[in-house]
Amino acid sequence: MKIHSSAWRLMLLSAGLQVVIFPLPGLYWLSWIAVAPLLIALLRARAPETLQVDAAVRLAPASPWQGFVLAYACGIIWYLGTCYWVFDTMHRYGGLAIPVALLVLMAASMHEALYHGLFGLLLATAARGKVGQRRALVLAPLFWVVAELARTRISAFPWELLGYAQTGNPTLTRIATLTGVYGLSLEIMLVNSVFAAAFLVAKERRRWLLVAAFAAAILLQAGQWLAPPAAPTDKTALLVQTNVPAQEGWTIEYFQGTLRDLTWISLHPPGGKDGQQFNLIVWPESPSPFFLNDASFREVVAALAQQSRTWLLVGSIGVESASASSRHTSEVFNSAGLISPAGELTARYDKVHLVPFGEYVPFKSVLPFMDMLTDQVGNFARGASREPVDAGGQRLGVSICYESIFPDEAREPVRRGAGVLVNITNDGWYGDSGAWKQHLQMTQMRAVENGRWLLVGTNTGMTASVDPYGRIVAATGRKMRTALAAPYGLLSGTTFYTRHGDWFAYLCAIISVGAIIARFLRTSSQ
Image (tube, rainbow, N blue to C red):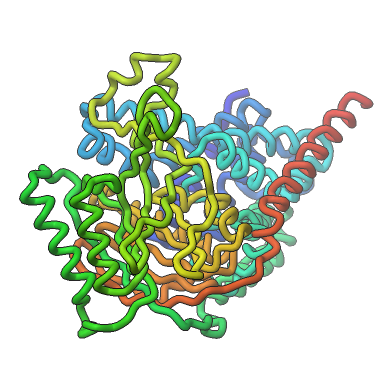
């Protein structure tokens, strides 16, 4: 039997809602109903009647294959609407021709949508048989978490999981200290399930379910306006927003002029803070060719650290020579170098989680033609350690760029003793799209999960200081060369999530697998 047209319309509605709950436009309050139309579509995909279903009408849920197709189509639309900026990034900054950039966007959309498809497959499988619809609605939040866990662990691009829609809700996000962002996703899906149930029961019962669903959504969303107490701060970092153009031709004159400008703003920050003693100065990741082994660059940053008497963390390019690494060729890393107040390079963090088609070409070793897709993709090596770097007793948990969308990249350094998190990034690659805000939204959740202050140093903005509740307490504007006096504190102790990681998501996976197995066992015994 074909999928009914009403199911397709509901799927399209859900896909649109799932797009608008993230920046931009960021209508976060719609997250409580965004998935409900998809749930209804999956549970009445073959029913020709109206949404109202009374006791005399037999529901017709989607078959497992139909469930996959409906949810997969929803996922493609969601990805295209949320990550449309991939095209511009690949074309303008990655050097890909327009047809190839479009192909990359479409291929990425079709790949990421597989996890929506997995959700639809699981839900439709659970919905078959007696009381199947009720069972499916109860299990839907668990299935959603399973799909998000798979996307995080398999796809290497867990962009905008559902729970991130409530990052700005400091009361609700406290659950992330136990469960990570997955707990928020489950909460949102629980309310969506109740909304969906209201349209799948007899009319006389619908009113009470709708009242319950609206009440839950309003109460949970109200946490956005309940302010937790201010987090303690006793330190201040200077976060320099370099605003270096992504496509600038780097002549020696431009290179030297940029270094002079950045040094000046580091010593004379805006706002009348000349002479203020900072605990840390941070230069972000940027497209500038700042090599840590370049003598002229090292001389400038060493002099800055000495003159300011401050530890300096600077986004740069690290090189491991062939002789030093015992390899046949030198390796190049996307790095952050730590310079002491004495002007010495004391530590270097090398980025572990690289961006496919941005910092390396996937499958190049087995598919040589992949290297021919672009002449501007980086060829960085992977870092090997997530150990914090020590800045005079300040243990810094450093991440670079999109590493901050992976919970483990923040959790591991905190578990190993980091007292504050620092993310340096170049969001200039995203142009004027909403991707920079999407990235910041996900980065904020790392502060909540681990109960740490988070310093976000960006090339083009928004540079920010984030407290352990995920609130932005200080920030710059965008596309300006400036510096932010960012308050922060060093915290000890670890959250349950820091200690135990994604236990909650894996528990959801175990329960989901058990439910599917039980469903098949019941079918085979009948």
